[in-house]
Length: 206
Image (cartoon, rainbow, N blue to C red; front, side):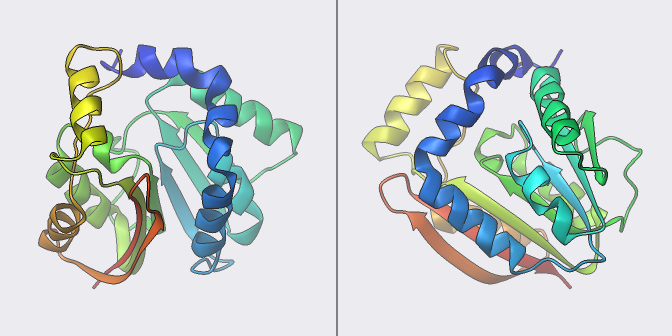
């Protein structure tokens, strides 16, 4: 079991309710993502949780693959897809380093509220770059709290004592530089929620 899997398993049943507290932000994220989708796309939703995004975009693309380290999140996502009779979403309890996913498999990869939770961001970004087709799009939404902000300091302390999974308090420039260092071209950035410093970043693999 991954270190944080137990936490996310316990959080799964209340995840949708908690996430939809910022309903306006969630709707905006969905609208922005849909603006880049094409009907023939294969999409990977990295850290798909309960399938909030994957199930919503399924009708806009050819295939969606949702992956998460929490088996309980995946169970809920699959149950929702079954209830909605969505046939073109494939949910898996796995990581982005699963070798079943081959180089150049995907037209788009999503990482929504994911990058700040990764232990090795450069390694994950390299894998994302590898999995995308040339010209493929990577979209992330990340709280960029910074190490010196009150919220950033508080969350870092809480994560260090194990109450929540470990997280990184990136600044926007730190995150953008890491993404660019991987070889991506950034073509859109936007702060979606100033208080939470939630930053939308869309990039392309050249």
